[in-house]
Amino acid sequence: MKIKNTKKVVVYIASEQKGFLIAIADQLSKIGFDVLIAAQDHNVKKLVNRLIPGFSRVEVLADINVDISDSDIATEAMRIEREYDTTMAILLSEDRAFGQGYLTNVEKVPDVIRAWWPFNRKISNLVKNIKREEMLLGDADFIIQIWPNKARTMVINALNGKSFSFTSIKHGARMFWSDNDYITSSCYIERMLSSVVSNSEHIRDYEVDRGGDIVLSRVNFTYKKALIKGLSILFQDTQQHIRGINKKNSYRYLGWLPSVFRSISNYLYVKHYAVSVDSMKHLNIVYFTLHLEPEVALQYFSPEFTNSMEAIIWISKSLPVNYRIVVKEHLLSYGVRSKWYYDQLIKLPNVEISDPDINSWDWIKESKIVATITGTVGQEAVHFKKPVLSFGKHQIINHLPTVQYVNNYETTKTAIDKIINEPYSEDIFTESKNIFSYAQIESSIKMPEYEYAIKSSVLEKDMAKKALIHLFEEYPDLKK
Image (cartoon, rainbow, N blue to C red; front, side):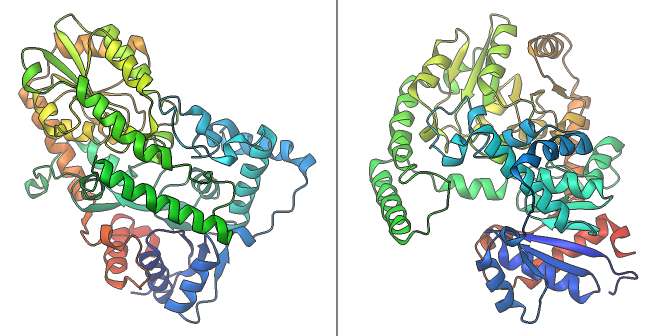
């Protein structure tokens, strides 16, 4: 397949899926696209040179010189806000380092040096990054990356180009192409809104997200495991510190070490106060899962609202006396919260904490309502035919009739009253489930090998071919 007109595509490659993305760039180049690889560092560039010798169009992002004086930074920042209809503050809040001050639910998250930079220095860094993207994408038709990036997306969209991110659709090992800043796409949303399931073969039982399941299956709350992990951090951090290869202005030396042992003590503490499914069966349950923080799932995909405690309080104040909220902690977040945080939850009069070892699906099945900001639990609830309170503005499930998007106490109270007093019919639940299942399957492809290639440094030709076939099926205009 040769495209009719040469289009320019920029492929961004960082630390993950290098072999896959290099193969994507190689195959696009061979079928007639004008491809530029934007490499995170010189190690990526060296790998490109090794895997596809002769490919010369590689730019290392840090090497792109942005010539702007400190006195012009404020003017440039205001231009960016005006042209892209955004604020520098919201962009800073979505950065794992610059946005640390917004992480009010994880008081023990390890310190990042950049988080302590003064405001002007943070703005300067962000402005230069955006200027760098503007220079790189000046004549690009579309970009390809692993995760959505707000700065890149807003720049390429302003240039009438497109952004594509290859990511999990949260259904087994299925992947899809997002064309916006969130885990959605125009094709995905269109299928959700069609309300017509045209192929019954694409209505399937839900499968747990493969990537997340693999990560969580490795969690082990024993002091032996913590000691091994702690020694590993001690060795790696010390080695990098001595060699001077530690990431500049990132986490402090041994910053993650206390979290390793705190996760064990917090896990045992929660276990002491936890409730089981059997002990709550006589009550009406609202199930709420805490999120992994700091992580893009919350900071990036729900920039308008990230406060889990506030959401729980809104629900708590809205419930009748015969309802209880069951809160379940994310297994990877025990190390970044304080006992004080769990104490605050325990002291709320109608809130209980789940036993950490209970499978989330067991709670969903027993719940009257499931609530989430951006968690996969909302999608799972749709498949289990449960009403959902969605605190995340950009969740794909918000397009379904059994999901209520809420953003303050009043809308939370109204939604809860409606769910309790005007319950959805079985037909509506089935409709939601079928539409969602159809949209997920129709919008994605099965790629179980993807999770095992995250650190791959070989040319992943077969994966790239499958992904590109899917891209051109979803967006045929790219070939014109």
